[in-house]
Length: 352
Ligand SMILES: Cc1ncc(C[n+]2csc(CCOP(=O)(O)OP(=O)(O)O)c2C)c(N)n1
Ligand SMILES: [Mg+2]
View 1 (cartoon, rainbow, N blue to C red):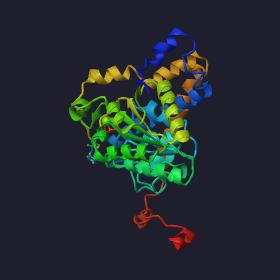
View 2: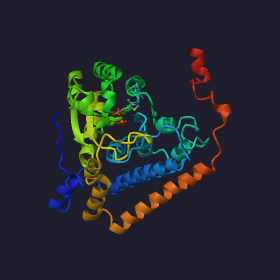
View 3: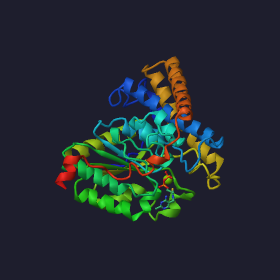
View 4: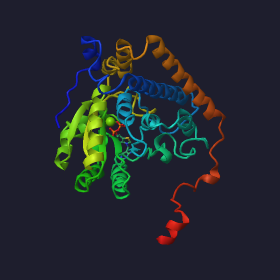
């Protein structure tokens, strides 16, 4: 598989009335749906930022602002039986998989109505009813779990693919490399997605990795690897579609390095002194959400008024989520020891 050095979609869009890929790959209504989801992610995170500063929520909190095209372009093409598993920067992945803004917000508030019943917090969103398998706080530790999901899918003949998201920093964890090795050996239907946002906390990729072209490091595991511009929704979608097909039809894993950028600090306690204002502004100038809104209007998939209405609806949806969370009951301390071990149904218990 070749490296995908993508041109920005907006530049391509200006050459023809219809950006390549829009009609062929992502039909207009689907593109509008994806735009709506990216707006939801952005508004959710920006509201989190505000309520955190107001001390209405607390604890660890890592925002996904700027990286939206990766989660949306990849997750919104999955089938219901497929799995998603990710690290602690998980709000965007959960929303894109279909966890409601209300149950995500309630989780941040530690309320019983949260997607993890208020016991997980920002880093541990879960919803197994739609195969969203977390939300994990230990860097790289969930990547072997993705192999477990792939293994289960094969042996239970579920025809399910697992998308596993992790950061550039996780590539320096041994467990990730063990998982990549096993995925090829066992022919597991897993797509490994390294979201390279340039930094692991305050450490730039080149300072932490001897080979800063991350996808090259996965080549030794004999799976297709590539790098994609994480700001280019079309390329993200296309590359992932190919990888999902390979996983589903041939049980072959793929490694995708999605180059992206977070607009906010590593977490809410990050002073951000390791990067300049100019660097951040340079990335914001390539913002995917703005670019896609322009493509949608240019290709007449929706009007500017309809785009404005989507923006307003999503803002209202996030406000409703805040209200829902604030009016929800606190997490019940008596549930502290529930949801830790799996309770097998009686017939399974007997057979063990
Ligand atoms: C095993 C382990 N070591 C250290 C940490 C502390 N830590 C939390 S986030 C992080 C950086 C990870 O960066 P990256 O994988 O690039 O993800 P990003 O935050 O950029 O999304 C570190 C070192 C941890 N959570 N787990
Ligand atoms: Mg990173």
